Image 1 (cartoon, each protein chain N blue to C red):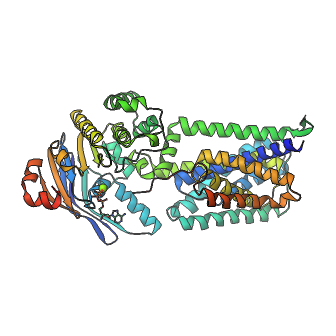
Image 2 (image 1 turned 60 degrees about the vertical axis):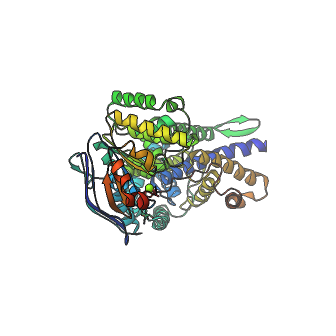
Length: 249
Length: 290
Ligand SMILES: Nc1ncnc2c1ncn2[C@@H]1O[C@H](COP(=O)(O)OP(=O)(O)OP(=O)(O)O)[C@@H](O)[C@H]1O
Ligand SMILES: [Mg+2]
């Protein structure tokens, strides 16, 4: 198992955002995490990548609230819930956040170089850059452009490209298709399949259930902080209750 | 040629405000600290040069180098002890930094009394340009300010540390995801920021008088610059600083007893900007956390 989450519970003040979650991702898989708005999908990714723990530290210091994290996150045999967020990327786990969040005032190239911040090996960095440009030729042509002026689709490509610059083993992507035109959406999903073919394991949070289920090896359905179901796309779509209640299909 | 006088005075104060405001913006951007003690470091640097050059009889040039190093150290220590533990508590940071500034003021008053002191120019003499005496020290101050701002630009735009500072300023969370150690960058930004304040003190000290309250006026001007330029924008700080520098010098030269109106220039501009364009000239939108 590349990623193994066990009995994870996260609460903000009194609100339980994740309730005793156990899930895993094996090497080479493309696993999706789907579920309605507010289910806790982003919170799960944020916990895995250490952002919730970082937020916990900040809220503790600002005495503004109380975040509790219980359970374990094991990646590649190591506990991720014990190390700070900025060291997790070193282990090969990268989180491409919701709403893309490029460094808006920086150029495309600077964004990509920020993605390679911890890369010691110059040659590897250059190879990654070539790979990202090959995957997303638009970025190559716009390498000097300020990223805030890119279109939504291009910004998503940039966010994924930036994530790839760190040579990840596991790429966690949060809602890459949200807010994109249908054509662009298909393009993004095509790129995700290409990334999978490069041998990178992917955990994908999405709302576009129908499309996603044709791509994935397995899927989890999350609702109100709990994992309701797990299975291949076909299995989940066959279940009337899940389809109607949780997937809205 | 009063116009030339206005121009030169504006250029010099603009450069000082630019150095101060850019430093203020860097620490605000990368560490989310509103450092009201910023110009107090500028004052400490001035006293340091006075001490070294006038009291100890060492060349003021050395005093300046020592002042920048000392102030950077002092700022870093103050950051570690006073600011870092409460960094996430923005209200507390305001109180702590203003307290720090007043503490520096009191310490300087204790040591040097509240009299007005001065430091000799590094290079004496002047060139007459269009009938106006342009002192070599003025040219030196302006040149040094520009060189340092250029150096800072290269540091920010061309180095790995600069990339990390910019990334952290724009989105702390994502910077974390990229492996950037946000608290180390906050520390580095603090050192650069107070270093700049020290440097500003170092280059203007021969052109000004030293006094324990000399941090107050630049603080107000710097805040006005930052409001005008847009909080967090270095370009805005730069442009805003010269606009205010020239505005101030216009008022001082053209309005009778204008020197007394110096402070109100800043405040009027600040109010005007807040009414007309609250984001400032180059307002930066910070990525909300979450
Ligand atoms: N900082 C916070 N403090 C308290 N509650 C929060 C906080 N952040 C998110 N929540 C709540 O936690 C729940 C889960 O949020 P989360 O963003 O993880 O959902 P999501 O599944 O990603 O939803 P979406 O599909 O809209 O992105 C929501 O009800 C949200 O309101
Ligand atoms: Mg979400």
